[in-house]
Length: 98
Image (tube, rainbow, N blue to C red; front, side, top):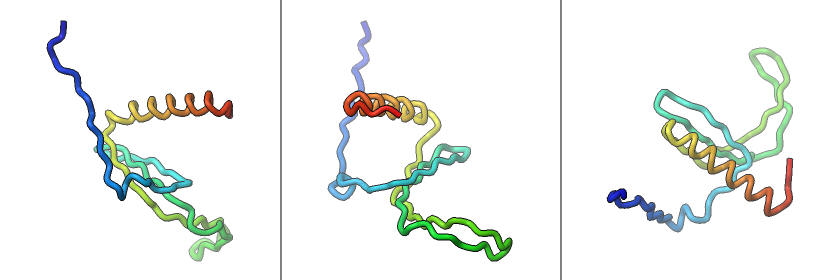
């Protein structure tokens, strides 16, 4: 029998954070110390633009980062598992399969 008490997270959230932020774009990148998740919202419709240095045309998609989350490498696998579990539950509840 293990005499170690179990860990229970007691999570609280401030009123400002509770409402959440809408994001329709995400970028994931890493440093030596961890992973960074940038959540952004597209602020205007995409527009054709011209790169002055090369003369090449490109589609400019203006975005604004609404939240940046930094997590240690050890949490990446846990996050991936949680996302997979929630996606599976969502698909089962909505009969939505891609």
